[in-house]
Each structure stands twice: as structure tokens, then as C-alpha cells.
Length: 87
Image 1 (tube, rainbow, N blue to C red):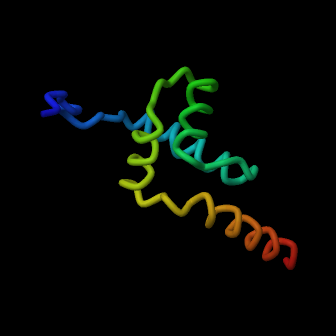
Image 2: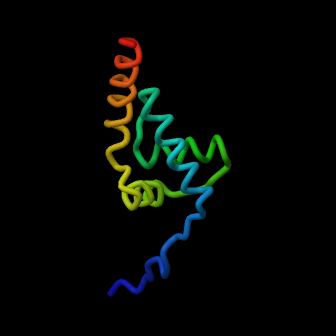
């Protein structure tokens, strides 16, 4: 039998850490970088010194219902640019 114990409790993210995850995810989406949990975790480590697992990042975005942001945000920005150009 496997007697290893898994994580005993959920990782608790502060609102500041959640905010950094959202900002980094949006930035990656807007400039066309990967929005994977691994890419965001790596960028946060380099930019902010935050040590988060890719699963933690992915779970945070899913809990906040932001899993589609990488696809939807660039499309929204393009639509808004087109609308503002018409004015």
C-alpha cells in the first residue's frame, strides 16, 4: 500500500497573490504568451518572487472562472479597438 499522505489542507492565497495571478494571466494573454499554469507560475517567480505551483495557479484561475481569459481577452481588446476607431 502507498502510505504517502497528500496535501492536508488547501493552499490559501491572499487577495494580493490572487491579484498577481490575474494580472500575469491577462498580460500573457494580451501579448500572446502562453497562459498555462506553468508559464504564469514561472513569470510570477521571476517578476514577483512568488513560488507557486502551476496547479495552484490553474486552480486559482478556475475558481475565479477565468479559465477562458487567454482566449477571450485578446478578442475583446480587438473588438474594443475597432469600436473606438469608428468614433
